Length: 504
Image 1 (cartoon, rainbow, N blue to C red):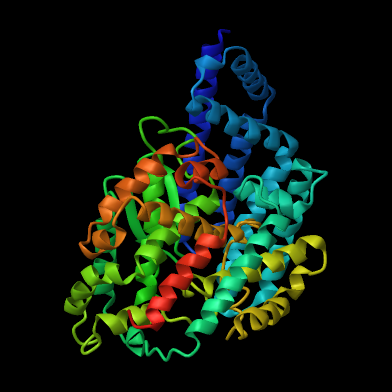
Image 2: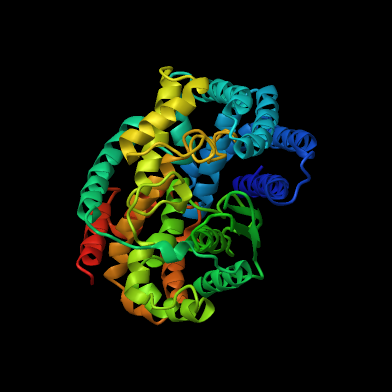
């Protein structure tokens, strides 16, 4: 077989795998948004079967042989292959190597266990009952260990899990970055501790229909394409790609603060813009048509949510529209008080509703609990107490209930151990990208004028359009000229909250 013919065959296989993954995402979307209360068991079997088919296809001998053939040809005729081609081979090679290490039976068992655990999580959270959920979580945890040991038997389990979401990341590197981040957070918390910010007006009753209309209008202004995406409602805000031109996001309107569903929509909208930009003529339908890593993905969602969406220039444009929509609730409030209120720094229980300063502490909490679980110093059954104790150390408070503590997230039920650090690393990445953008664009002027699509265009040209062609460290250096550092996060938060504390 001629080498380019081999690559063409490999790309056809990748497109088939990508399509199957999208079908699995459709089942997941339905599970989160509209499945009947008793549909979980069969849905678990459906997902398990499809996951097994994907595993068998990527892990089979013919796939491994095809990848090896193309890899050898890249060495002998490198000029035939673009960065895009090499990236596709890199991704498939890593996936094939990993999946060939994992028995098909374990893939099926894991799929069933995570669906059962996710189903039980809904019930347990509603009933504030960790004990009923614990056995299901423990099963997922044990299967996660088995899978990690299959993939990299000579590496620490937690390093293997971190690598799944951020290639090359280790617990030691994460601890170093988080240590610097925590110092910045403590400094800014001290800086804002003397500020008496009244945000009670954000907790008044706001009409849901108006909220949904106004919140969605901001996501549309960001450049969300309704021909290629859908905005919905779920128990937990999320983004999923169910097709190359079908990216779906959700928010929720059960939180007491009017700003929470808005910023959830902006956050998920940032994910969607990345996915839409990553699915283009060069990448569409392949495994390249997505973000390069989970941390980079979070950098984009939190860039829109916090850096842009919580800024004063952003609200100079949008606040008059809020006043018009909510005249009774915002009577006598004014722009300055509103901006201070949405940027209020105050430790709270719920991660997704945390302010951008204390948010990192929520991630550090989860990271340290995960480390303890996988080094054997913490048992699943003891998670609620350990959570409460660490929350007291980091955030200065214990959760009001298990539902707002250890049961608030569904990531562990889905087997996503090692995922949480991506959220905080995203804050470091977006701060670094921000200062590169500032050197080339007048960001404040664009925000004041409501020209969000101009910001989206810059991000699309410099980040989104590459999809997964470049790995996260390479893309960050390509955009900013240097590797990841926590210094820009320190600069961003210090500058922002110094100005807020001074009333500017």
